[in-house]
Length: 195
Image 1 (cartoon, rainbow, N blue to C red):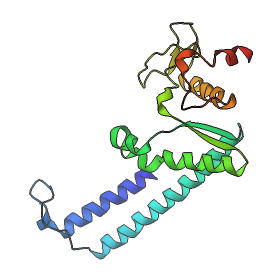
Image 2 (cartoon, rainbow, N blue to C red):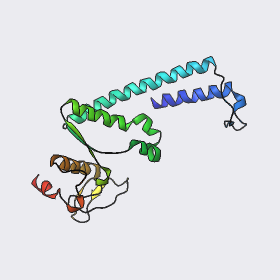
Image 3 (cartoon, rainbow, N blue to C red):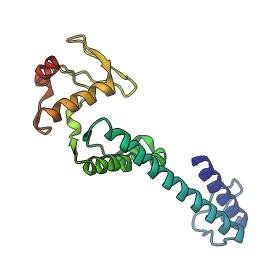
Image 4 (spheres, rainbow, N blue to C red):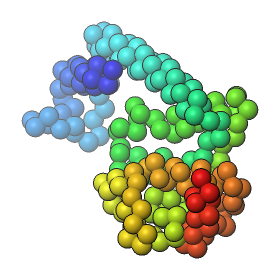
């Protein structure tokens, strides 16, 4: 879908350039201050095609979000997620990819599905740094590419994402206050040993 949309956008750009040649310099760069006002009938047809492709992609993404949210709800009806600023992701790291993956919309859909089935959703503050703490209380900063949690203190090894999700589960199930809990004190360790 994204390839089709990009192809339609490039076709629109080519048509605009062909209709307004005086708005571009010899290297094909847009001349500041000159408005590309001429629109051909072909350009209008291509614009309609682009709109159709974007609408189709939006509908498919919504269907995918709903199916994924329902699959998540099969695991349980309590959703605990870190309170991430998706706009900052778009500005700093992922850019255009955020436009067609829309993680904010997906998380909103998952939370909505949780409320439909009688569950709840809990936003955990980022300052908890779940992916950097171990249950024993030791903290080790990890690069984004480091996907395995290895504790130098107690020797525990686990998948980074699965383990941080497990810590979130322990915090929510045992009614810890996410705003005041101090993971460096190892408050979750007794609950791990009992499981």
